[in-house]
Amino acid sequence: MATLSLPTLQVADTTTASSAPRVTRALNSCGAGTRVTVVDIDCAGDEACRLRALGLCEGTAVNVIDARDAMLLEVRGTRLALGAALTAGITVQLVARA
Image 1 (cartoon, rainbow, N blue to C red):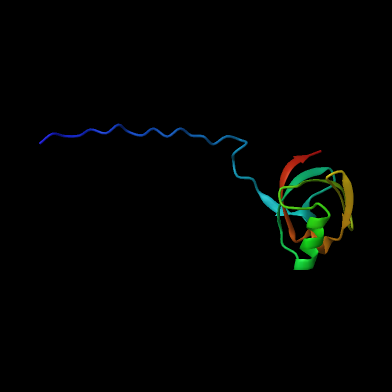
Image 2 (tube, helix red, strand yellow):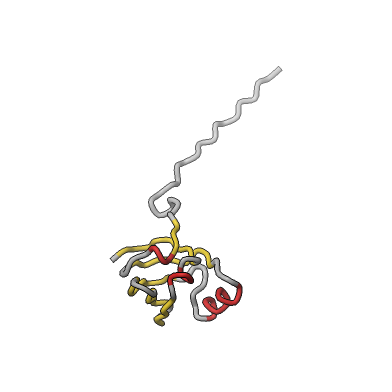
């Protein structure tokens, strides 16, 4: 009986710094000067709908302008002021810190 020899599959390591998993956090934990991308909006239905209507959607880039009592954000060229309770329900990924 003949033996069949199959080639070994070589898998290259494609993990790079840009494809490494990023850590997510609540938007209200980000400081002023931070640039983030929205990952998830976990708010009441009407609040989430209103945020999306204002341009704050999953995948949107956001600049944190001020992070004192309320957060002042730059979203798609517009500034939005959101309270801490609302920003606690918005999950983001860190893009850059000033």
